[in-house]
Amino acid sequence: MTLIFSGQDYSEIPPTIMITILHYPLFSQETDRFHAVFHLREDHEHFIWSPHIEFHAIDLSQFMVK
Image 1: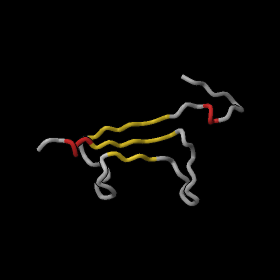
Image 2: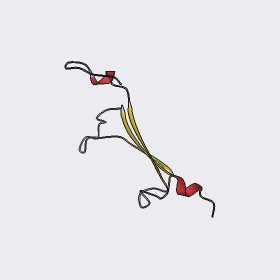
Image 3: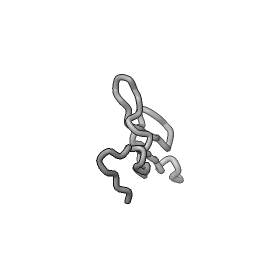
C-alpha cells in the first residue's frame, strides 16, 4: 500500500483499476463490445481527472456456448 502525504503530487499514487466481470451485457444499448473501458472526465471540457483511475466492464456472456 502506498501512502501519500499533504503536499505530495497525486502522480505518485499507483494506478487504481476496477475490473467488473459480468455474465450479461451491462451497456447493451450503447455497445456490442465485450470489453468496455471507462475514465473519469470533466463534463464540459472533457479532460481526464486522472490517468491512474480506470474502470473495466467485461461481458463473458458473449463467450457462452449455446
